[in-house]
Amino acid sequence: MTATADRLLDDLAGSGDVVTDPEVLASYRHDQAAPGLVAAGTPAAVVRPRTTQEVQHAVRAAATHGVPVVPRGAGSGLSGGANAIDGCVVISTERMTDVVELDGPSLLATVQPGLVNAQLRAAAEREGLFYAPDPASFEFSTIGGNIATNAGGLCCVKYGVTRDALLGLELVLADGRAVRIGRRARKGVAGYDLASLICGSEGTLGIVTEATMRLLPPPRSSATLAASFATLGAAGAAIAKISRSSTPSVLELMDRTTIQAVEQMAPQDLDQGVAALVFARSDLGGEQALKAVDEMAAWCEQAGATLALTTDEEAEGRMLMAARRLAYPALERQGATLLDDVGVPLGKIPALLEGIEQIAAAHGVVIGTFGHAGDGNMHPTIVYDHRDPDAVAHAREAFAALVRLALQLGGTVTGEHGVGLLKRDFLAQELGAAHELHRAIKRTFDPHGLFNPGKAI
Image (cartoon, one colour):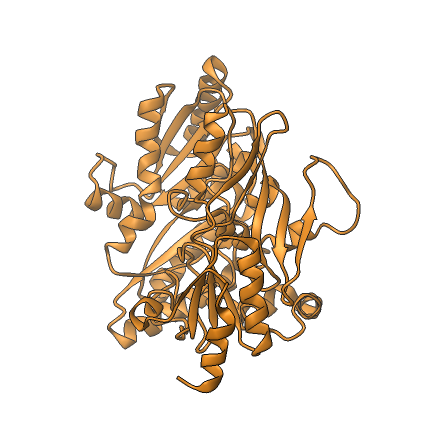
């Protein structure tokens, strides 16, 4: 270890748990992005603070030595946004797990960033309330990570994404100052909306140490629809009709490849011959919920559904939805996965689904498609052999074609997983001349470029 590194470690003392063991450091090198496709360095140290003051101490120590800082939550991201840089300090918020305040009358909770999404949901439920954002990773992803990527989830079609639930933040800036932005009130337009700016910034502007989140009254009882389609185009048409004519609390899709993977992993008697399954839920309660999904079923049949089932039995509905939540784990069992995260305008969903099929055929790759059809955010996932250089090359080419397709359809390169390292080369194509505005904001918050450099922007 060099003298400079020794001085850095000396200065990090007081930042919480400081780790330098090589075997432990190795486990903090990367997130869950596709293996071998994004760079990952080895940190000089991992700091695991418990308080805002310890985060401030770590940031100031790193700034003194000009060392990059990589913020990290659970490491469950899929874009390389938490990947380490050689010689950096990783600041892991995994031990910052407190519910600082749960104010039931004000319908808000203030929490530390390491709190797992499911733990916030459980805390809200104990107060008879509901925390809406529910990414598929809700059982292990953290609120800080959800804020970093503006995570969505199955309920976002009705209740919105993390930004819609965010009221205020405590943030440590690149010079070590702690500031509070946003507010506790439901409404407020004093100054710029900096909390919304931080949400989705992937740790490039500051480190969140507390978040005040909006809670809601709990949804009423739900009814569920599952409909099968012989073609992806018919499924897309049904989704477009439901989106125009109803307000589902969930509207999701899985294609044939994904259905078959789920059946291999956890048999549920899904029809493996259909081109797609569409799942929808209404949480209007009682007869209203059942009437809503019955209407959706009729629209599915008009669009060409081969079968449409509805139920107002909660247990049966959860069983149907369980298949959708297994989509990505099931594809992971088929091989290495390169998950895309594109979003398009709702009217372009049929074109997106048909284009994905064409890309799979043109590049000779397997693509399993699933996602949040109700807001146009789909996850075409390439399954490949990461040990085969040719297979890796084809996967890269298909991935780029998927991103280009989304942009051609007026969409975005990422809906909820972030740019990270995986999508960085595509960002300029979406932002155009506005890219420099984003870089100027980065320079204002982080003039020396030490916060998660090389990511997102």
